[in-house]
Length: 205
Length: 205
Image 1 (cartoon, rainbow over the protein chains, first blue to last red):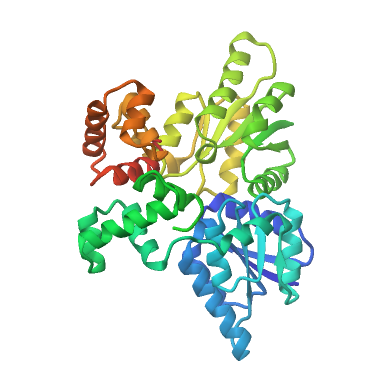
Image 2 (cartoon, rainbow over the protein chains, first blue to last red):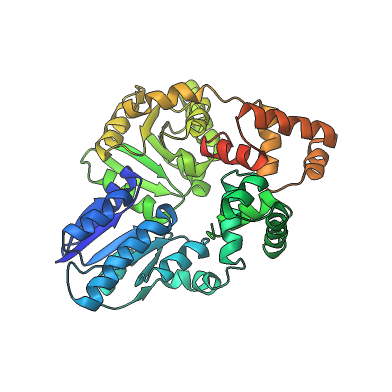
């Protein structure tokens, strides 16, 4: 039996995905929100951990991947491999999952069969990349913004004014303004709001 | 048998929700993305149309509700009633669904049983409001922005500069600036980006 841990923050969708995977005769499934996932993954052996990358953000992905790497190299504790659900339009989320060491990538616009196939392959120790994500994988390497620029833009996206961003990051307001201009130029945006919109749409933020 | 049409734009979630509802012995289910839903609802008799209100936005909701009202009053054509899935944190989406004439409201953080119960009640001609949404229903009536302010803010959220918003709406740039100040004040935001963030979070945009 393949032991699947499914991570999604919206309960009704989590239960629905679990119902789908649970129909497979060779899989057992447990489903949890991101906040409980790491604890669950630590507590019980899991073969594949399926995570909605768009919903979950960076931190649980990294923690789950951390557990996964640890168990793979030291052969201790539960072993589980990451498979992420990502949208075609969200290269940034795919990039985060790649960085976190995910082994499987299934497109959210795929048929359920793709997810089940992906789970079997990742459970068998192989990699799996959905064909529909080929273009997204290419674009995932093309984040035009530096880490520092992403930090500035994230703060701006939270609604922080320039002065607050400057204080938070220990920069002058002039430097923050320069970052914002560079960000606007690099993203091809018309202004700051547009730069935030573009970057969120691509999943860079 | 209750004929359910399920509308969700993300295929794997659509299939998963369909798998969930399809387990019920008294329901048959068809699932479609928003762009195909109105055509499908017109073409075949449907008892309950389940729509993810957060994903779908205003226009398909209104069209589906239009079909529903038409069939209810004139007793012609297929009859179907709207049930929406909404998040607790999104009073704006709930408000849109209320305005569109939805009869059922199920919280996305509910257990699947709630969705099935809701479908049965709406199919029987009753209304259904998930208990978990009581607070959201109250907040849904409290959109602090006027229609005009929402139009201005939507354009700003698309990244349009003040001059372009003014031209599009046939206003002076000064008037648009006044609208933006009023919006920022009314939403309790720190600046324009913050006003967009708050309004999108509440589902007003």
